[in-house]
Length: 284
Picture: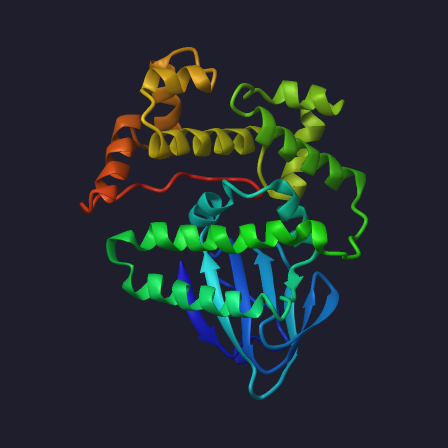
């Protein structure tokens, strides 16, 4: 992850590019600016937040001389870990409303969060990754707690987009017991081919890749946060047996189950162990 303070002066008048970042969070530290986000004009001032996915078309139209922003750039692997605990309603909200304005009571929380984020980035040491992930999860979960109280005008979505998001809802509900695309297509009353078209259009991934990505996150969570033996994990996630679970996990992550669990325990015990990132996919 990269954290930087920027004037964005070099990006004025052209679509903003954040390199290989999968998700960018911009917090205005001072000044004012006008952005076009997916062709909608928004005015940004101090403490406003922009949450920009890699497919968001963001154009900086105007900026004041004193405009300054904290920019947090998340690679896909980290964004995937962060998103694991987040409700799907939040993704819909941020997709439709990438410009977020905190209330006066929320501003001190935002400022404190920025200070903690900077401290974790520069002083987190061997725990840096975990600290950043947890802080980012807290940031987005705060948005989730406010969703019912926000009265916003939500754009109408097309039937294709609605079907794609319904599929992702089903993945969150069923991936621990269903991994075949056919069953999801049947639940949505469409063909697997049409489902594949929808997910490629909306998420730039196949339905199977999205399902597998969620299953891998479930496996990693059980390995990291539980003491369940491998056999019980296989049973809980409806794999035929532990050996099939091992092959599945290695195919998608390049690492063994026991190796991943040992690496997590090594980090908890303060040893320097590197955990390879998964190959995540999908909207999260």
